[in-house]
Length: 313
Ligand code: UDP
Ligand code: MG
Image (cartoon, rainbow, N blue to C red; front, side, top):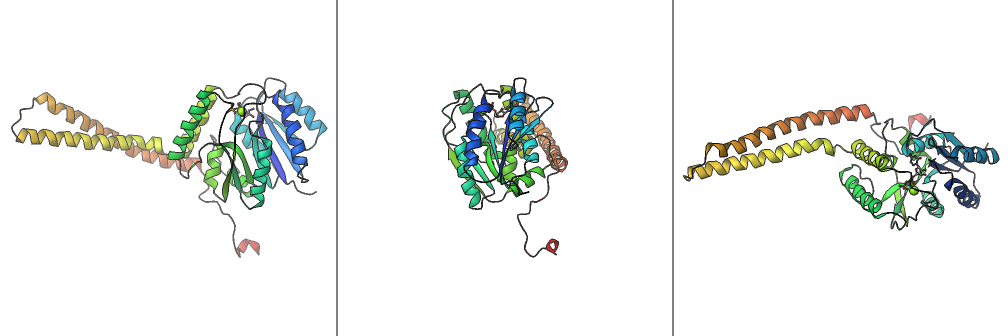
């Protein structure tokens, strides 16, 4: 059997209104490419008619594949299941609600043909979204971009194309709490962007509650940066320097004959003690970071390709 060229991977939670529209747009679009393709939908424990719609569609069209979760595990888990199931040479991840315009996937495929392994969809404008969502998303992207290493690109969500080897690299990361878009930055390879304006949802309401957004945001920060763990150390050192400066000033004042009550000396003494405490806590946090790194158990490197490898023999 000929292999599959393109896989479309989608997470769907209570998307009974979106799915028919999604299929009616995406299937004809991929048919125009004249290549084999599959569409993998993970139903993330929906409580509406998503499961029935998916079952009907899968029965009618073998190119559509469905995975039903036993309950709501979250979009990242649903995408992970879809990536694991996918067999395409290239995989396009998109939302079910058509906020990731399917035509943009064609531009991503062009970039893939040029030899890119990861093509990020970068949002230029988000006209269909609330001011709250726009502001929090922008701030979050800026923050995670600043603290992550390697850098997670700004204004980029999960709408991406991955080459097979990029998908395999992501699947080789065993951690439980993932932000796939941050892992995409980590795995390397040749990466590029296509820009798009993010429209409003075709139908229905956002499935991302504030609680889910906070979990996604914190997973992204905690899994991809030790920045929070270094805060105590940085604060400790800064406070230590300030306390030492205060001591020095007091000593100079005393030498110059300025009378300082005993209580005044208490202030830098207390802050210095606190600074010592924070610094020691910061040092133990560095060990925690190391332990976390070991427990996360990411591969130490990802190989792009090899020349004259012994494995070829
Ligand atoms: N989604 C999911 N599980 C969830 C929440 C959302 O699979 O618990 C899916 C949802 O069906 C959609 C995608 O994740 O395909 C993005 O969700 P949504 O459009 O609600 O988020 P927004 O675009 O508002 O950030
Ligand atoms: Mg959406």
